[in-house]
Length: 316
Image 1: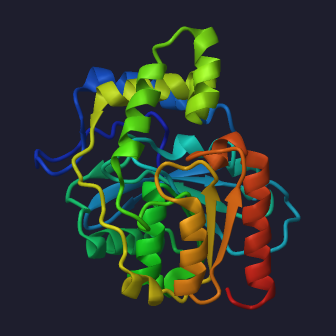
Image 2: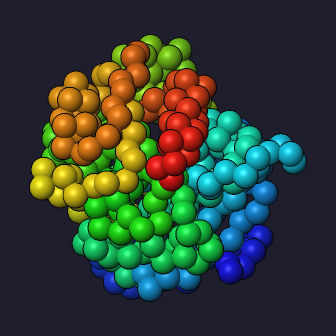
């Protein structure tokens, strides 16, 4: 079983490999972790924090809920965040999702957070092995896996290569379905520049760019601190081929932002259910790449309904 660790524990041990993500220095790391703590504080406090040792990294994990002492027994949920961030980004979601379930949020190795990467996770089979070892280290034989953006690619890749522990997969505006184009990187760059705009202008820019982080001061501070403090050293993953998608048999829920710039929502909402038997795809209106943040209540309800339906039909 994993061992509990305090939030203040030193996690600086690392490797000098050039293909592994790392902090620039200890001072910037501490500033970044302080900004992360402020974002974590926007949501419910975790019930515990643990570390899991794998062949690739020491993975830091937050456990939440269930909030209700009399909650019925359900399969746990595992959350995998997007690139360039960490488990703090799930603050709008962990409360609702953990009301009647245990929820685990992973800090992905290679991204800024409390996990410590030692080996690269560039190859799909390595990423799948890391995640499977992490779930095994947590003592989890069957889980609902939820991933957003790069975490969506990790979840989809897991359903393709190592699905044995998966009861379902939920993909929130995920990577892995299309090659990431220049419009997405331009949006990321514009959003980062907008974090330096005056407060009154940031509200308008947030609406125009579909960037909810611009109007949440704690998120804005965390993103800015992360860009200074940490260096990601992995290439963008290649999308799965149609033949690879056809291998997926895990119950799958695809939730897309109508104005996403990572992929083409209507195209993927038609394509994925056609390639993956039984897959369900829906589009969230009035949002881009962050539906789980700016439409958290709606997205949480949709995820929970999908999980309940999957278990009710015996597919879990």
